[in-house]
Image 1 (spheres, rainbow, N blue to C red):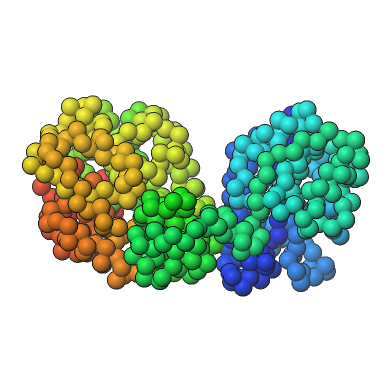
Image 2 (spheres, rainbow, N blue to C red; image 1 turned 180 degrees about the vertical axis):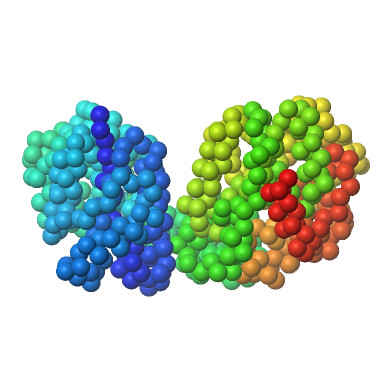
Length: 522
């Protein structure tokens, strides 16, 4: 059964797309948002057994006499966004109804037997929704999925129809109801699917972020130095997209919010529509894609993945671990998980990186990934379809490493592991002594979300605040250790080298970069 998904879209030109979000967002930001929606929709379609066909509207001002040139430019732009598409076609017809009718007619004429049509304004759409819609077309003539504002975001047919598109006014809050009337009049069997909210207005953005649930209790502001500095709560943050890169993505706000609003997730969504990434070009040069990836030693069923930052700050321990794993028949691969790229708002680039990692691991026959870094662990666990264990769990299984004995361990939990402490549960088997938690008021090590670029003073204060709660600190994140040490906390220790009995001074300056680069050559 040949199936196709028609993606209806404008070409994302600044000032001509998502204009109802202006002036809350700039024209450039609106185009970036729309570009992200196209990428997301195309990637979602890749998970469905159907061909993707992109139907585009020419930008305003495109002159009919230059149709071929205009089409070429549109296709060039869209091809970079809608990867995997089987074709790009101009929309034909005067109104939206006529354009949809023409698109269905053309696609059915290509030989497809079930066809869905959707737009690019529904970032919440999933591959499961598409799959379910195709399944419904086995029993029904039409499937149509409504939006909260009275329109619809998906319609699917088993054959071309020219008698269902003449509704009074597209773009109004009665389109879904009017369309149902037309379908009923045509005598078609109709299945109504899941309702979602499209993103057209500032209010839609607020709902997408979850900011519309804010009750202004102030709990988030009192718990976050960033929000406190600007005198805003999470709803206030949502209304100031220019502050997207000032959030440390530490998750503290969500932990205290009675409505479970996730400010870190909100910030990442806001970053996805921003274009002001110039301060991060050095980081992106290195990590998108990661320049120092090395898979030569990874042709094993079980593979050790140390990540990039531990490798940078603990090269001797990394080398020891590689040798130890090899003695147990375990390989080692060097790569970056892609979390920094994702957190800067480059979701598509991050997903491409994850696809690359997954493909390499599959090619090399890897069945188990042994992860060292808490950032890698939490970023991978819901994104890579592979058995994954922590390095601490694996050391315990192999009978390697020795207990670290102290009367008291003042523990600092890295941000991604702070709530559930999943990785820490594996660390605990090596700690013999009282577990203390004096640093719970320390919001972040200061490196979270690359916010230190915009908020250097806040970053410094976060790191230095650890000294207010103790002279000694133990954690299991190399990035945290590096920044605490950099800010003068000399007795900050990574637990893993202690377990392995390795003494290693944390390097600063250019040396960490050089340590990462060397992994490429070894």
